Every structure is written in C-alpha cells, then in structure tokens.
Length: 465
Picture 1 (tube, rainbow, N blue to C red):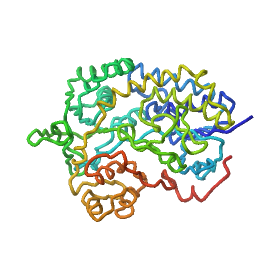
Picture 2: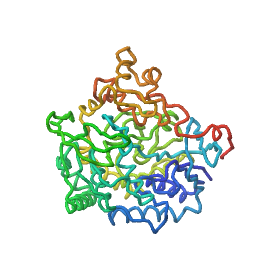
Picture 3: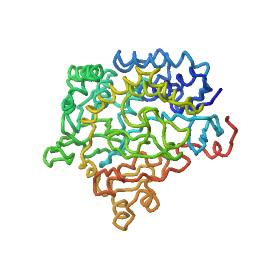
Picture 4: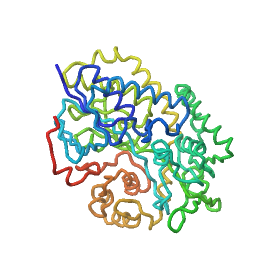
C-alpha cells in the first residue's frame, strides 16, 4: 500500500524522518525554507565545499553522517528547497508557498520538524543594528563564511554563546568577553546527566580552551544592561546580577563593540501544530509552547506528528534519532498499522534519544533564565519589534484589563507582525503574569499565514497532491 508523507523541515530530525519514511515505501515530499538541507545546526555553506569549515571536527562528522544518510535516498524524495509551509489544517492539509505559487498538499501524514527560533529578552538598545542573535551570527559564518563583526561581545545562557564566541575567534574576530547569566558549572548539579552526554561535554571544553588561548574572558553571573550607539551599536553595558538576573547597581562595565551576539534560549516553531489542532503545553525552558506528543511523535491532531527541537528543545542528537522514529511512525499512521514493531526495530534510536534527553537535564541548569530578566526593558524599550510596541504601551493595556495574549494582540498589535509572536510572545506572557513565566499562560490563537509569503503566492494555488 503506497502512502504519502510530507516532512516539514530539513534539519537532522526532518532529514532522518524523510529517509526512514522513504525506506518504508512511502512517497515523501520534504519541504524546507533553506536552499540546502541541514537546518540551522547542520547548515551548509551556500558557496559549496570550498567554504571555511565552521565548528569542531566531531561536529562536522556528525553533520556529514546525517547529510550522507539522506543523500542515499534523496533521489526518491521530492525535495522543495526555498519553500514556506505556512498553513496546516485538519485533514491534514498543508499549504506550501513554492516558486511563486501555493501547493495544497493532502498527504496521509505530516511530520513537523520545524525546529526553534531564538528567544528575545528585550533591554534598552536591543533593536540597534549590530545587535544580533547568536544563532544568526553563526548562520552567517556557516552559510557564507562571513563574520558579522570585528569587535564582539557575546552574552546569554547555556552552551551556544560559548560555541559561537569560539567560532568567531577562529574566524578572526576580537571577542571582548562572553557574559553568561549562569556559570556552565551549574550543569555539575546533574553529574549523571553530564556523563550521558560526555562527548558533547568534551566539545564544550574544547570551545572553552579556544577562548582561553585567545585571552577571552568568560564572565559568570553577568547580564546586559543596555546597548548604545548612533547609527549602530558602539558599546554595550553589562552588570553583575545577584542570582535573580536583576543588574546590581555599581557593577556595570561598558565595552566597546560593533557586534553584540546574544542568546537567551529558544522558542519552538509550533504554530503549524497548533493550527492543526495539537494539544499544547507551555514549558518555558524547553521551547515555550510545544505540542504534546507520544513516544512516536503523534499529536492530538490526526495524521500530524512532531520531531526534533520543535517538539521540545533537546538538541541535534535527539533530533536525528527521533526523526527516524517519527518517520517510521508516520508511515504506520498512514497505513493504519500498529506501532508495536517500531521500538523493536529502532531500539538503538530509542536508547540514543533517552540518553541525550538525560543529558539535556544538565544543559537546562545553565539555560534557565531567572524571572528578573523580564525587568531589563524600561518603559520606552520596544518589546514587539515587528509592530514597534513598547513596554509602557503593553503595560497600559494590561492595566486596562487586557490580560490574555489574544487581548494584548488585539489592543496593542503586539504579536501581529510577520513573526507571529515568536519574538515577543514570551515577553508578553511574562508581563501579563507580573514579571514571570507562568506555565498556565495560553499562547495566541494561531492564524494563517504562519510564515512570510506574498499575496501572489497565496492567490496562485495549485493542487500539490
């Protein structure tokens, strides 16, 4: 019985899901916004093999293993690069903007491997040119071999700021310092979890050694206070915090720079799953609003499965293993078959997922952002970048009784821009809950169109199968 499966996202989860579904006899369409497969973590250079190699040798080996595994079956997959999956309705019915038109796909199953976006925490000056998310800085290195600045300050939480700082050093940048909310030693609270991810711990140590050899300060317990500059960033002020992420007066340090790279965690790209009717949980430290899914990736939306970081932040190694599991499950769902044999056949993937999920418990210790971070913005700080809505405007609406995210959106336009709230929803959620993230907060109602597409693409519809 031939069945059809659409996979959205060509990172490690999506590539391995497409491979597994293809090997089980499904007709597979792989949809991705990038020009080449790999996703953010395994992003390929636009220039081809002659581009500079970014990252440690062990990371590059993992990347090549996934890309090679997909290339073995790529000729059997209908691959749509540069395509935007912008709406998903029950059925499932997926709308994809591709080459100037919308393809309306009605597969037997959809695997959403949509990954994450970086989470913004607003502070004065964070909208200046030259203030970038660390993942965006990394993307310019990987895709084009271009560093986004020469004199750099990196700030944030968790391992990514350290990795990006080390990659910038190797690309020739002068990194002034890395200012972390928590010490990476916080992960030592979970020694068994660290042991489970020991190969990744070794890579983290390698990055720290690169920074040490370059004389880069790694500061623990520091947060950004403000970014200053006329036309673009010229300096950033950082300060110590006492554990709650609120800056301690009198500890400020001003650092000249032309690039501030920041990362304070991630937001799951879950809007398609929500639009299709999946049940959603709010777990701020695992990506925010994430779809509830079983061990095989199945959600409450019939025929819709999720895999990788878009199903909860757990890293690339979990994503690759989970992609195979979910790809197999998608074929079983499409055929109306039992899941009984999948765990037996993919036992190694289930074990790898369990091990690296255990490791992520240690990573979360360094990623947690204290509630005081939501106090960094002052009244004039823009919190919704798309619609230029300030904190004072949002707080005025809240004091007028608009306390749900939907109500704030209607009253202030915050969250109404092209990003659909990915950039500001956590900020809005914290402000409505008195400066903290409340797990009971309900996300804005997802609306088509979830990604940026043109009117012409929406109007020009073709039957995509």
